[in-house]
Amino acid sequence: MKATATRLPEVVILEPRVFGDERGFFMESFNAASFQEATGVALPFVQDNHSRSAHGVLRGLHYQIRNPQGKLVRVTSGRVFDVAVDMRRSSPRVGQWVGVELSADNKRQLWVPPGFAHGFVVLSDSADFLYKTTDYYAPQHERALAWNDPHVNVEWPLSELRQAPALSAKDAAAARWDSAEFFD
Ligand SMILES: Cc1cn([C@H]2C[C@H](O)[C@@H](COP(=O)(O)OP(=O)(O)O[C@H]3O[C@@H](C)C(=O)[C@@H](O)[C@H]3O)O2)c(=O)[nH]c1=O
Picture 1 (tube, rainbow, N blue to C red):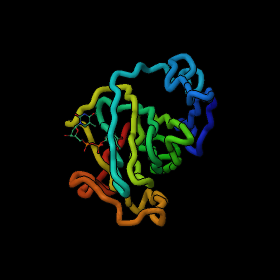
Picture 2: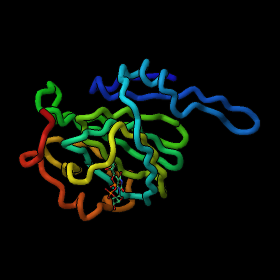
Picture 3: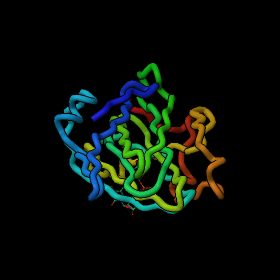
């Protein structure tokens, strides 16, 4: 497992060792000890999620203001641009973002800690997105920050899309920075 820090130090890119042979490949997609060594995080994971999205779908930027979820995310078919935003009020990097391309080919995983908003846009024809979470889904605590909030100013790779990003109604109505809620 290779771990690479991003410009937000708590957000880490993980690359499992891939054993290829004439049959295909094998990798440990999750190993608790390797994960803890790479991130310093000992939280248990309690939920696994899988979504499939068409080209141009943008989900996010989501976080839970109570029961915050750390997310270990990866892509098993297709290619996405994945984004984490620091939503911790007392953080020196509050409002800063990091974006990483995750694909079935590069087999990268991104560790998005509790206290960060998360989202992604699909660059391929479709994408299967799998993630583990450190807390349960709690819709009453879920919040969405607008993907295109000018204060955060995520540089989404929109030139790679054949269309404008496709959003859920919830994400289209997401909060702007000035009315967003933060982690203390
Ligand atoms: C996220 C989630 C959704 N659902 C249900 C609620 C709803 O009816 C349906 C679709 O939910 P959403 O539209 O919120 O799904 P989606 O927009 O894919 O939400 C996800 O986006 C990415 C970016 C994240 O980071 C995730 O944590 C999660 O917020 O699935 C669950 O039952 N459990 C869950 O954990």
